[in-house]
Image 1 (cartoon, rainbow, N blue to C red):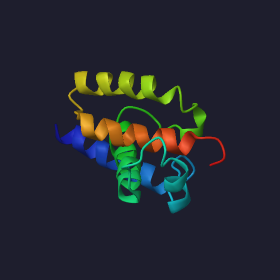
Image 2 (image 1 turned 180 degrees about the vertical axis):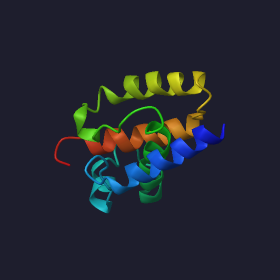
Image 3 (image 1 turned 90 degrees about the horizontal axis):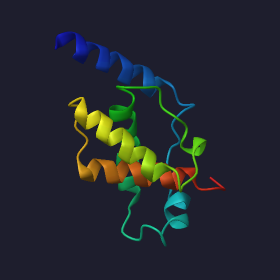
Length: 111
């Protein structure tokens, strides 16, 4: 168990140091998706980004949000959440929704 925690911590730190994979949400991003997610806040965006970095990097390298279209992210996130939960990595529905909203928003053309 200790080894898993240590490896997770190292991977999380390595992912945090790598800025090329994660895109930082900004206020213009929030304006651009207001129609799709009217209740989404900039804090939600940032929480989705953080969760993406913390949860997804445990199993694999992070993909750029632009690596998939907004239409493809929902099925990808659902599949990966199911795999993570089977491995007891636990991503709850609220976390899954925030990760998905971050990825869909940041994959939208023009970002």
